[in-house]
Image 1 (cartoon, each protein chain N blue to C red):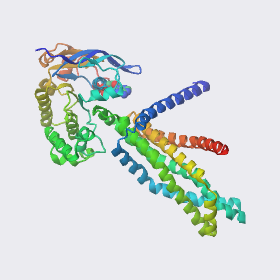
Image 2 (image 1 turned 90 degrees about the vertical axis):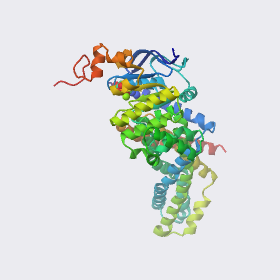
Image 3 (image 1 turned 180 degrees about the horizontal axis):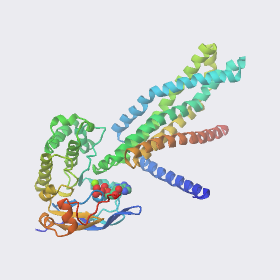
Length: 257
Length: 262
Ligand SMILES: Nc1ncnc2c1ncn2[C@@H]1O[C@H](COP(=O)(O)OP(=O)(O)O)[C@@H](O)[C@H]1O
Ligand SMILES: [Mg+2]
């Protein structure tokens, strides 16, 4: 069974001034697939997600969603396209001025759903990410980093998107909660056929949830493969990264004095 | 860099920035003219901007009216003429100039800074990006209600400032200078007309728009974490204050030449 491409990247590049972050990235992400990007901090993983989402415009290259070129959309068309997407931000990006349940139900409230109905739905979404109903009325500032992230995830899945982007969903979570999130990502894929792009440093989680894993290094995808293929990779950069070793071809920019 | 190149760079930078602010303003204006205004957000902002600015505006206006009366009295001297003109001088100055300008400068410091800090924080913590991913246009949702609330609340605040300022002047005239209160009020109300009130309100409306625009623009384009938020806040207040004073001159000049042609 060959699924159609949900997301296509063609020679996507992004620079900030003279600094090139992404260099000619090409990839296909199939319908219903979970595609994981690994790579060092500052390698441009978040920038790539923002380009696909349209929060940033790539310097060159083409991005297609469901076969439609979305690289340069008008604001209005961009907003329409956003209904397909859900995004979990690295630090949650909850709205400070609203309670947790109002955050989760934001889209529903904007669409005019009655407050008590929206609140019930929000509480059920919070339960999916392992947050109790007591959390619903709290302000974002009253939550720990991990709880914020989970609330952010509840908000992202509230509108039942076709494509989910996860920016480090398990970073900063305890191992058990991490696995709750892993299971949730798997469940969304199995039940709703959601296509996902996941950024993670957590290799255990990457192996568990991914259909494909790729490593971003110096603006390019070094190697793309199934979890088994990546685990057995003989690319020295990939091997060093997945084993978390300080020794290898990847040198950290640590100043020698 | 030599001085001429530096001047050139400054002029280019200024022109560039003015252009970007204009584009930003027209993006918001497109929603406002279509009356596509998120009402709930608007009322929330109107309360924040209008109601919460009352204490500072009242305090400023009261003492401005008072000191204006004291200075004018000392300046003109205590002749009969002075007594018959004092109320008029104070009222005209308040309505046409000091009410709108001082109230707006105070509000720029309070509200303009708060708007820039709030939107700046939302920018650096990716809350604005999050809004977009929730299919919500941040210009419509965040910028429009704030600009409209500033533009509409400022005339109300200025009206209040005028009343309080004239009241302050009255108290100083009667209690400190020892003037007849009726005389003060008579000269205050006989000497002013509709155009004076209109001029003040037009100014308030324009200044309010400037405060909302500068606050949202700087906040919206904040970069660089907490430090960036601090910078955006300062720049918003400075730009708004300068723009208020410059536009004050041109509105006044335009109005006076228009008055002359009637
Ligand atoms: N808006 C921006 N302006 C300039 N540089 C940016 C911007 N966003 C990200 N960068 C730079 O791009 C690089 C990649 O950032 P990012 O994608 O956040 O890394 P990560 O892989 O850790 O998510 C970093 O060096 C960062 O400084
Ligand atoms: Mg990142």
